Image (tube, rainbow, N blue to C red; front, top):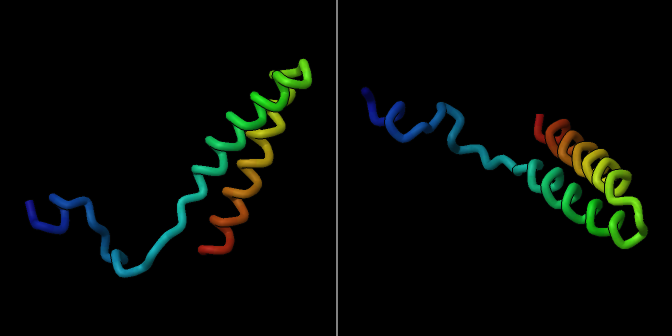
Length: 64
């Protein structure tokens, strides 16, 4: 196994990539908490998930 395979590095390791997944995770948790405070945790969860996914998709499209 070569050093490149062992470290999991790809050929494009010089490019910095932003991680958009944090927006999905944070949006989900924050949405559920805000929804719980308003008496609708499921709707808050789904709204946070949708908003976080849209932000992550935007970052992914920007990085392409």
